[in-house]
Image: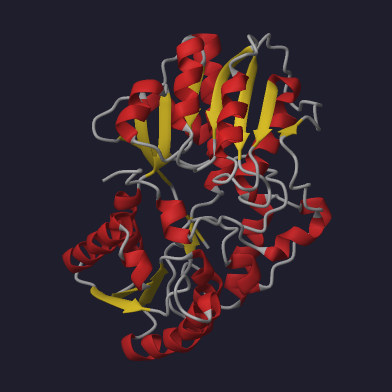
Length: 402
């Protein structure tokens, strides 16, 4: 990866077809409690963050960029992403933290976002929230301040309307991941791919389409594809506990049946710790989690502790994961994306906003976007247009193999 990256402490019809992380992981991006011990949790009542104004990069710009994120309690990665750019650029960044109850306080949220346009120094707004229902506020901002640049990374409103009012819309390429995960598993030596999900997830068009894509790609690559349903954490009496217990018992059985060259994929965040621990225990393969990031499942499954000095250092986390897996004779058997998207999207969005304001970049050149994304992420990031819109891009990030 690129330079040392400080990410803060980590616990890691259409609304929008691409809403993978909310649909795929039950709406929660909080991941590892193992990383939470090194820093206290910010107050849930924060609305606008004004601390840490000392910039690590000169911030003499005569404008401001507003970064909108969920609160720490709802999505720590995105919150930390806002804090990262606040620390980097100081007073140039206005970090607006949305209320804990987004749905119950939606009118307040829309008012908060709309009010950003009242400050003539605010020249760009980056929304890194992953919610539906924000677009009406952005339309109002554009109507009163057409000069303001708006980047969503992501929100999940009607993409046709977003393409009309948003300067640049970003999201992950869920369907392409269905192809990439299978191809990666094949490269890692897998001959079988097991897809774990549950009924309420498979009722979601996106997740069902990704499963079908994975099955077709597995067949194309001569791999056995096995779909297994777990207890539904959203409808069963024992919820996530029942799902995890099922996985704990079933994964070893499937590995015994199909052999160690079996790749395991689960569609829910609550599955990942169990899957990783059982993959390591049985010597199998884990090509990617539902939400690919080193903060999901790995720290808890591998017993990784991050001290206060290294809190949020993703390079240190990746190094520890690699060491743990090497010690378990599992080198090359597990993989993910090297940094949390919740951190990448706000930082990348701010860098794009700066180019738009300072260099008149219109955000519609995928080569420029890919080059800038590689600078921010430290790895290659691919950009493909959604539905042919030249201001709406889906991304895939290069993987790290442990």
